Amino acid sequence: METSRKKVSLTGVKPTGNLHIGNYFGAIKPALELAETYDARYFIADYHALNTIKDAAVLAANIREVAAGWLAGGLDAEKTIFYRQSSIPETFELATLLMAFTSKGLMNRAHAYKAAAQANTEKGADPDAGVNMGLFTYPVLMAADILLFDSDVVPVGKDQTQHVEMAQDVAEAFNFNYGRDGSTNSNNLGLTIPTALVRENVAVVPGLDGRKMSKSYNNAIPLFCSEKQLRKFIMRIVTNSQGVEEPKKPEDSQIFLLYKLFANAEEQAALASRYRAGGMGWGEAKEELFRVTNRELAPLRERFNVIMEDPLRLDAILAQGAEKARAIAVKTLKRLRKIVGIQ
Ligand code: TRP
Image (tube, rainbow, N blue to C red; front, side, top):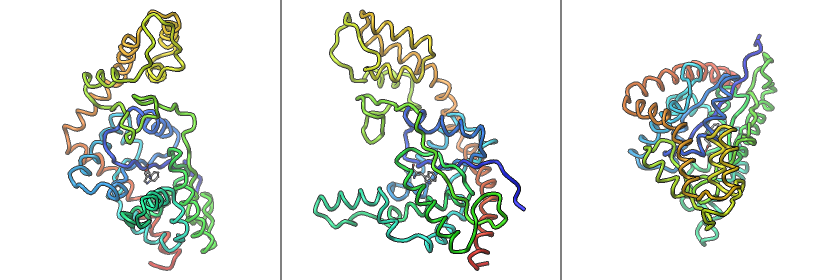
């Protein structure tokens, strides 16, 4: 009999390189908070990245950087199972198994594929131009990542909720076919139905130009650049033309929005009143932002550099995570193979 177990939180991180402050507050910090109360399983989705990154050196470097970034950001690899997707061959076997339960129509409706097809159509090209099967079947691989570990919650950004819903659909199709129950206390165990945990209450992190910080807008402040570079980035934040003497509204200023992420309540109140009083120029506000940002990021940067300088240790950490993850994955797959009649 299955005894009640601690709930599982799982998420995948695409190694797209160059983590920025938006990733830190939007993804890393909230996921690490969940690791306090859930059995957390976090991994680098390297095969997902292969769909778009076809340069081996770039992909290899991104994988290391993202892994080091999460560790430097506070992931405790003793407490959280931390591994590379590619180290778990059962993921790919499960993806094949799930293909049989995934309707093609469902994949046609995936946002990422639809967006690519639509962009092609607008250009007058074939809708499938440049679309590889990795992109088309992306949700199946993601469903395998999730379902392999009987994940209860999947912390993701809003853009990924459709993928988690597709994992639900596929799991339900599987359970329905075999008359299985995915609820975790049943000994008639099928696939556990996951729920997306959307980070609603995390602050939107504004980028240098005031839009949401994003790699694709080219407005990001990197998490691990040198102190000197960090200062340069902050000085590039776009401001309006208000002069030094003019009173300013903190709530309209992205300098202040960023400041709120790093400063304590007292510091926030103090800077807000300096804004309102007038007599403080944007340059000075940026200096104050740099001070608190660097205060928080300096220890992360140091940890990151130490990890990056010792590739063997990083490999060992990921290998240890893979070993723990595989112990679970092998069991799940054995159970599922039996259910479908392949033993
Ligand atoms: N698709 C996710 C992204 O682009 C990454 C990912 C892959 C993932 N597999 C996952 C997220 C499983 C959550 C669970 O960000």
